[in-house]
Length: 390
Ligand SMILES: Cc1cc2nc3c(=O)[nH]c(=O)nc-3n(C[C@H](O)[C@H](O)[C@H](O)COP(=O)(O)OP(=O)(O)OC[C@H]3O[C@@H](n4cnc5c(N)ncnc54)[C@H](O)[C@@H]3O)c2cc1C
Image 1 (cartoon, helix red, strand yellow):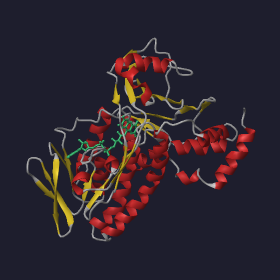
Image 2: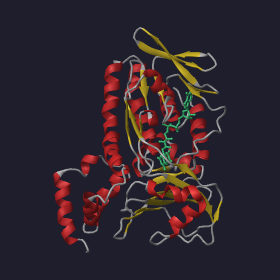
Image 3: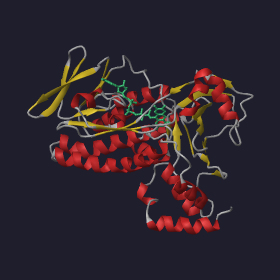
Image 4: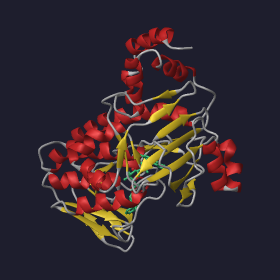
C-alpha cells in the first residue's frame, strides 16, 4: 500500500481485519503529518460505511461535529430532511493521525514512515512491488496506489489520465467565537460559499468563487474572504469572532480521473484514481468508500479464492457510482451560466418534500445519480414545480 492517508489507512485496516498482512509505505516522516489542503467535510453518503467500520464513533470521540447542511439556492433555504444520513467534520490534523493509529493498531498492518516510493518492481508481466527513494524494495501480491492527487504510482505505471477544468478557486480560514454559525452552503451561481462547524468549537469559512475574483483574493486574502462571507444572504455575524488560522486554499485545481486498474498486480484508490472538484466536498467520502469496495473485492483474491481480473473488474463496476457523480460535478465545476435543469429541480424541491429529500440525498452522495436522472423522478419534479411557491 502506498500512502497512509484516508484511502490507504482505510484499505489497510480492512485488509488487516480480514487476516491479511499489509505494509503501508508513507513518505511523511511520522504519524502526525496531515493534508492541509482539505475542507474535511465528509458528506452523509459515507455515514453508513464509517459506522460499519467503527470509524464514525472514533471520529466523534476525537471531537468531530456531525449533522446536516442547510442549502441556499437563491429562492430560500432548504433544510435537511428528517432521517437523512449525517455529514461529519474533523480537521485533517486530527483525522489523519487518528486513521494511522487505527490502521497501525490492526493486527497484520505495518506503516513505514519516511518511505517515498519512486519505482515499481515488475516481473512476469505484472507489478510485483515498489522501490523507495532510498533504495528499499517491498514486494507483495497486490500493490495499491493510495498516494493522492499527484499519484507517483499511477505515473510510474503510465495510467491513462482524463482531466477537466475547474473554473473556481477555493480559500478558507478557521474562526473561533461564532456560536450562531451553522453548517450551510450558499449556491450563488457561479460563486459558492460554505460555513462548516468542526471540532474544537471552530467554524470554517470557505469561499469557492469564480476565477474572475482571483485578483481580489490575491490582493488581501483575509479581507476578501470576510467581505465575501459578510455579503451572503443571512450571513453569519463575524463581529464577535476571531480568525485563528491563515487563509489558505488553491487557485487552480483541475479534476482528474485515472484508470484505476492500470496494470496486473496494481490498483489505484482514493484521489489517485479520481479527484474531482473540491467544492462539493466529496473526496474524503469517495476515498473511504472506494477503499471499502477495494478491500471487499480483493480480499478473496489475496486469500487465493478468486481470480484477480474478476475482482478488479468488480471494483471498476463499483467505482461507476462515483464516476457518474463526478460527471455532474465536472459540469458544475465549469461555473458557467445558471443551469436550467438545476434551477428547475431546486424549484421542484419547494413543492414536494419527497423531491426535496431525493435531491438532498443526491447532494450528500447517498444515492446514485440514476435515482434523480430518470423519467419517473423528473416527471414527479415537473408536477412539483406547479405546486411550488413562485
Ligand atoms: C481545496 C480542497 C478542499 C477539499 N475539501 C474536501 C472536503 O471538504 N471534503 C472532502 O470529502 N474532501 C475534500 N477534499 C478532497 C480530499 O482532501 C481528498 O479527496 C482526500 O484527501 C483523498 O484521500 P487519499 O487518501 O486518496 O489521498 P491523500 O489524502 O492525498 O493522501 C495521500 C497520501 O499518500 C502519501 N504519498 C504521496 N506520494 C507518496 C509516495 N510517492 N510515496 C509514499 N507516500 C506517498 C501522502 O503523503 C499522503 O499521506 C478537498 C481537496 C482540496 C484540494
